[in-house]
Length: 92
Image (cartoon, rainbow, N blue to C red; front, side, top):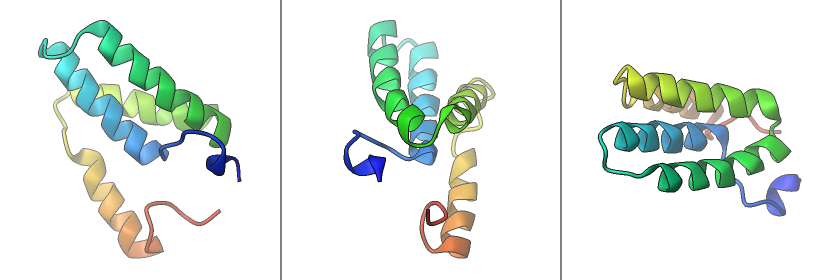
């Protein structure tokens, strides 16, 4: 219900934002301010809608996978979720 009133992206999308932004930051194609502001903006929506656990999980996995160069790892899980639930995340 809160999703309608908050600027919100689901945690799987936030994971992709964190992963891509971290990769760009470490290849010096993005500065630190441009890195932090979108992460805070989208992170507050996840914090309000889904809670701190999903925020920390998607943020942490995004950074770890970017540092380990596992780009596209979450995409495989996303496809499996689509096949099982017919939508990106289970219905609320």
